Amino acid sequence: MNKVDVVLGSFYGDEGKGKIIDYLSQNADISVRCSGGNNAGHSIEIEGKKFAFHLIPSGILNKNTIAVIGNGVVVDPKVLIEEMKNIEENGYSVGNLKISDKAHVIFPYHVQMDKLQEELRREDKIGTTARGIGPVYCDKFERCGIRMGDLVNGRFEKQLRKNIENKNEIFKIYNYETINAEEVVKEYKEYAQILKKYVVDTVTLMHNAIEENKKILCEGAQATLLDIDFGSYPYVTSSNPTIGGVCTGTGIGAKYIGEVYGVLKAYSSRVGEGPYITEQNNEIGDTIRELGHEYGTTTKRPRRCGWLDLVALKYAAMVNGLTGLAINHVDTIGKLDKIKLCVGYKKEGKVTMDFVLEDEEIKKCEPVYEEFEGNFGNIEGIKNREDLPENAKKYLDRIEEIVKVPIKFIGTGAGRDSMIVC
Ligand code: IMO
Ligand code: MG
Image (cartoon, rainbow, N blue to C red; front, side, top):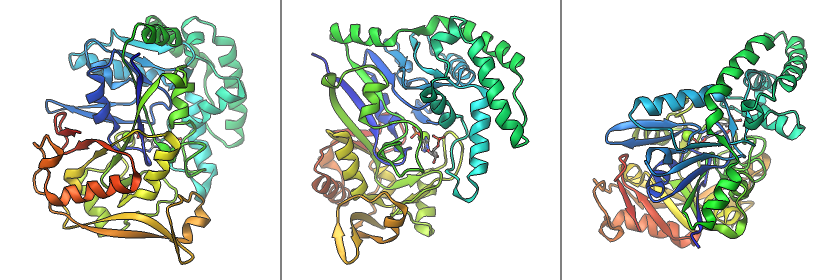
């Protein structure tokens, strides 16, 4: 049986999942997004052209791959339609797009509520992407959400009007602009017409594909440390971007899961607020940001940058059961003279490999670093791991040795082909 392979983020997002997904989806019959929404931003460079994906699985660029937006995803139809247009304008087809009838829909009140809630958090803000992600998942669990199936079958108006009425009561309290129900109903009826033909029961679609021995690839968005359960709560997103979210977000049972690849960078980064123990809020962080072009795909925010944290990576390997690592930006880190790797946390005089999530506990920890030589030179065209310069090999070997998960992909540059497949 062809197993379902999974690509997940190992840190705080933006690890370059798009690059690995792009490579693996070339052999996939189906490429599926499982969780999150347009808070994700996956950029892919093909023949010098940059594509930014927020909702549609990037497998859509392969002619024969069916791209599925799974039930665990939250869909902003306006953003989705724009993304579809952009793909078509660049000469690709969206004919192979399928959207789960069970995926929840983002409405303007979700986006507005996201902004209001951030304001109310005052100095404790999360730094959300303001795309309505938290509020739409709240409605899903509160059981007043509207799903794609309801939207395209015209069964949403009553619930929508009720929701708008309720949300407007809250907006009034805070002197926020209220939502005009007539306008939203009209707007979403138009979206429904455009999207109707893409909405199907994706659970059955995927199970039929598994039966037919087709290859399925799950495209993770966000990342382990942003997970609502396993991340640095409350500085997290409102879904499960870890392995469990793959099953609940697609309807694929655990026994069908094959490889679970954890994507990381040779350094680390984070957008938004929250603890980050190996952050270099200094010249080194600034240098990494410039060398790695670490500015958000979704919100354009400058990313916080720092050294790679193997305590966190070990935790990601544990929580997700990673079977392989994909390490990007090895070329970028190789531009530095000296590289540091966090190999433990020192807490009250003792060095530990136990990952710490609590803000207060992190304050008691100090990262323990090993130092490596940089200056890898130009590694972009290298196709075999053995051909990498000694300094690069030492760095990668040490990561593997500590985390005890084999490196399967090594990113050596921005382009589609700049990668070593081990
Ligand atoms: P990809 O898929 C990086 C972060 C936000 C914020 C927190 C909560 O591109 O790796 P949300 O809008 O989800 O409620 O924001 O999560 N965040 C991401 N950071 N990459 C992402 O996705 C992210 N998706 C959410 O910055 O700190
Ligand atoms: Mg991103």
